[in-house]
Image (tube, rainbow, N blue to C red; front, side, top):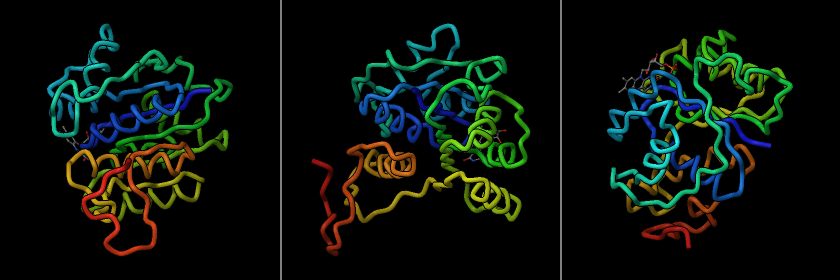
Length: 218
Ligand SMILES: Cc1cc2nc3c(=O)[nH]c(=O)nc-3n(C[C@H](O)[C@H](O)[C@H](O)COP(=O)(O)O)c2cc1C
């Protein structure tokens, strides 16, 4: 069964790329939903204009790109990705009878957080998230905004109450980051931890102060 990965229009498309790469490396299948607004952040952050008609070509280029913007940094097989247009409310993930393991929203905009907390289902991404909650499947929400207003904080509490795991896109520095990619991979790794997917994206805390400095996963 696949994981649904929803990419909404918050800054942080490298987080989505890191999660997608790691899911595929772990042998998982992915149903990908890219919101309309996220095409703007993707364009801004990678200069890639994501096109429905050429999604495989554009996704390959996106996933190959490092967080430092360098093209061709990763070699990724996207054969196990199925892409759905965010306006396609008749798509598989809009029904609870469509078999999936759960859903990861990365990055999640505050608009998306609000839409899912209120059950708006304004597009396929939000509908799939509502379905994930009603089916009591795993929903991980990697919210990206700072500072947060009270409204968003209340929506995040609602999501937590409904069973979602809120994973703020907030990198930590104890794992010995030396590159932007390390910080991105830390957030992506915590998203996958919340989903219960194995990965080697960051070095885990081993209880020794200073143990992380300058080290990367081996
Ligand atoms: C370049 C750019 C960066 C943005 N970054 C954020 C962000 O970090 N967090 C956020 O909540 N919204 C951000 N926004 C605003 C969202 O894209 C906007 O609220 C949009 O309606 C979200 O729609 P979606 O949830 O359907 O993707 C950004 C917009 C642009 C154009």
